[in-house]
Length: 481
Image (tube, helix red, strand yellow):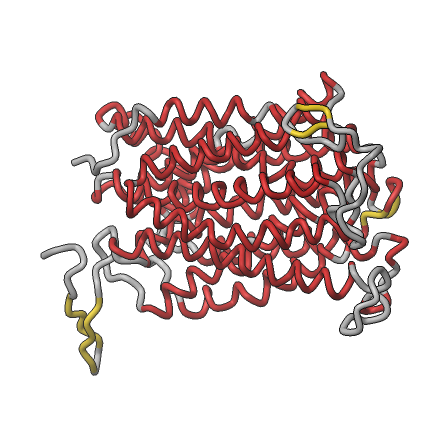
């Protein structure tokens, strides 16, 4: 029987025709598949609102009060969270592999993430409220919960989808995640950022809910909005996507047996050299592109002095093109194969980073630019200079390639891993994404502190991107037996 051939499933009182999943069981119906996709619609706005465009720059420039020191601290915060992820990720991956059910774990991490994200509202300027340490703790908790929810969510994909729909659902999930982020950013723009600054008749005269813009409440509200959005739109996953049956193993047994399986699988990688090489490559380039996401908004805010309004518009523009990135990733994969698609995506990201750091208010592609004699391009209170516009155009390409790379990466493993070991290798896939999760943020934080430069600190991600690309050259695009 072929893996996408309909199979007859006997249910008391009825007979239905369903497809086999990528690992051989019965795949979820279309509603269940789309509910799995919808979880990224619920979860991904956290990245956009908190770690990139709104809260991260606010934390760096206002809570800390110094963009350079703020970028270094932000790197340390994400480095600590990454270290926790690296230590506990294998254990949770083991539980996902041997414990059966995924949704109870996803529910726990959604709850933790929602509480921590909501609490970011109380991080006040000048180290007030919960202060730098309190905000750092909330970010660490939310980041860890975000990544761990991904471990269990990603591991559901081969059980939910037929083989021919794995790439489509993977790309669609990332695209919809970016689309939901775009919708929230547009709401933030018209509800909290533009009112009072431009005289457009369709805007409210002041920020909604009586928010005090002078106290940066229009930035702090990103936390509660991301938390509520997550809880509401995660519900369909729990209602409609079927979970893997419980194995009956206790948590202790699941961890013990799961870790044994991980160790055994790692040892067996000696006989699956292609998969092993890919996982090592992903470990490097994944850290690099994650660092680009984490520090993109912080870097732009510090170098160009952008405030909440400009950063929100910047986020809207990039999110529009990031939506396309998921579909670009799927197209690249279908047209050129997973390996070449990843090389194109990561290569494009690396080139974009080089071009991005070549642009400052006083330089364009490393060539001096006389900003003093330049006139504003328009009267709107954002992107008024040539360097700013060029920077946005460059980062648009970065946004497309990063989203495409995320889609290509999940698909790559589904295409090259042996079907009978798919679950085990997806556990290692999660491990490769978490084992060095601290490296990118720590690298940027240390480089920023040592050189006292946001530019040098941000450029350090190229070491990881290029390293991952080089290793990918040795990966074959074909399933192992």
